[in-house]
Image (cartoon, rainbow, N blue to C red; front, top):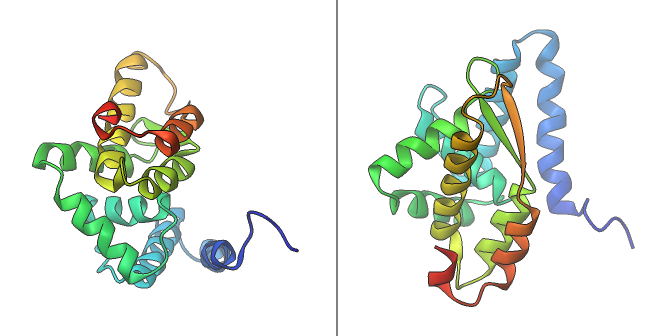
Length: 172
C-alpha cells in the first residue's frame, strides 16, 4: 500500500530538495537554497527573484501549503495580494528570516496548518496567511529578549482548529 506520507506528490517535492543538495559541494548554502526555491517556483509557475523578499515569501508560502502546480501557485499569489501592504511586508520579513543573521521562527506543523486551513472553506488561504502572521508576531513579542536565533513554535493545535473551524469570524 505504500507510505501514508511519502506519496508520489510528496516524493516529487522531496526529490527537488534532494537534487539541489548535491550542489553544496560547489555552492554556498544560500545559493543552494535559492536553487531550491527557484525550482519550486518553476513548478508553481512563479517568476522567482531571489533578491526580492516578496518573491521568496510567496514561494515559501506555496511550499508551506504543499502546493505543486501553477494553478495552486496562482492561488498563493492572489491571496498574498489580498493582504494589506504592511501585512505583506511584515509577513515577508518573518518568512525570509534565516535564523543566522536575524532571529527566525520555526513554526512546527505549519504545513499541516496551511493545508488544513486551505482545505476548509470557512478559513481559506487568506485567513491562514493572516493567522500565520499573528503567530509570528505573538511569538516575536513573547521571545523578544531571547538570545536564541531560531525559536520553535508548535502549531499542531492550531492546525486541528483550522480543520474543524465552522465560523470564519471565529478564526480571525
